[in-house]
Image (tube, rainbow, N blue to C red; front, side):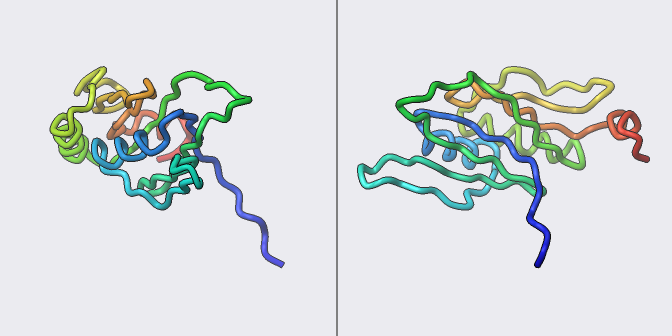
Amino acid sequence: MSNPASEVYPLLSSKNVGVIADWAVTSLGLTESWRFTNDDGVVEHAEVLWPGGRVSINVIQDSGSASGPSGIALRLDDSARVDAILAKARAAGATILRGPEETAVAYSFTAVDPDGNQWWVNAETGLLDELRGGS
């Protein structure tokens, strides 16, 4: 018997799952893995992929409420890739909340999706790896 899979990934709640999934693909270049549409044509669940991770987007149920906007970090290996995704986001009409900027932590920008979630696209400088105990 194999060990069960263990991982951590963000969950977003939205009244417009399809809109948020489409935004992540169009504005930031994530890849849609799948989506589930109910019999009424409402997209209830979708998953978007980023190298090394995924984001699950789920519809807000009638009995539940949204937890409020969330933040998601998309890490890249160099600032040129950050600039390329920033250009893609701007071309798609995404709202850029911050950046591009260079800090001690990373070269980055933050985009906001239609639900107000903040997507931090960054190329870390190495400082966080040092603080994490890495090389």
